[in-house]
Length: 492
Picture (cartoon, rainbow, N blue to C red):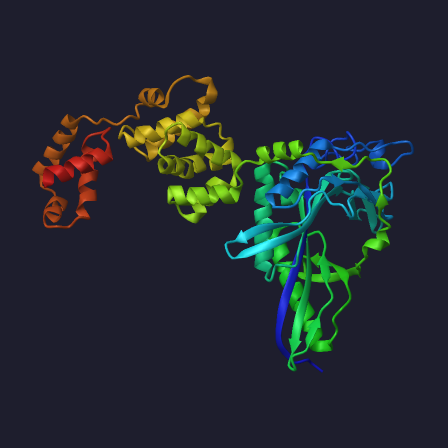
């Protein structure tokens, strides 16, 4: 018999696995699968990955530093002392039958992340470990046989696991946090963060507190959805699991068992995989082959200096200083190289809003045409500042001429010593600010007595644009701003 529902509360925690973009793996000198995606299967493997007798792990310092930087950006407490533990399990994707991880002393402890002005997500921990290999269950085989093959290229990749408290209440919040975290690790340069390459994998933990018609509260068991690798799937799978748990209770009264689920894209539904293991099932114990990690104050200070201004702080600064739309500011603040380019151009004397508009208009167009990130076009900050000043001095039109000049400056890059004004002169892009030609063009327009002239004299301000266009068309190379100011002066 269906149960009577009064209300329900959604609790969602999130586990995120981030592959770090180091040159080598976590505990060996083998090339990192995260930075060699698509390599021949089992080509990024050595004796340590295979767990051969007599091999010993050696810690990757850069992976530790990258993890600490992420922890600092998430407001985490960084452990002064931590160690490595063996998480024992038997599975073909990890030949030595244990994973080197961190159990009771994670590198990064409690922290907080502001998802929005009125929503803060608590971080429980972030620990460093090695990734497992990859099993492919649809390998070709006989008619009735389905083979599983193992690719160990991913095994041993440095993997940062970030665990949040169950502070999310909607699938949209979960997806938004995933997107913000992707921007953060890319901004810090610690991971490429490409979902389709497996650099980030998400595992939401979901349960409900259901209040029945009599006011009694029923708590469903936590289910974990494994290995979701797109923001769309993350949101849809979370939404489906919320409905599944609620419907299950309404129809049967069952609260379920703590378990792991998978996601079937073809049916857009979750499916049960296995009952959830507890920590003691893995028989954690300290790894005897690795020394503990001691984080000194000097080391921590140096890592803090590498982080610099975080995207949220830069976003706030740009919003207050530039007066741009939120979406435009997010483009400039979200990518470290783009923000650095803008800041250096401003330091070189560029009008902040003018430089920002140049990047958002012509810069973004050129970046899209070349399929490159905006910050990697090779545009020099000094040259961007010079283009901005040419426009402000009415020497260059901000439309097509400015775009052509930026393209040429990007092509020449650091190889050319020519200033923006010198290149603009060579290309014939500079506007004339000599009042003689401007007045002559205005006189010719007045003599022709066009209809918009009468409209403007009658008080119709909108007609001014048409008059400016007529003057500009009759004489090439004039500044639209100068023409408009002179025209208003003459007609007053």
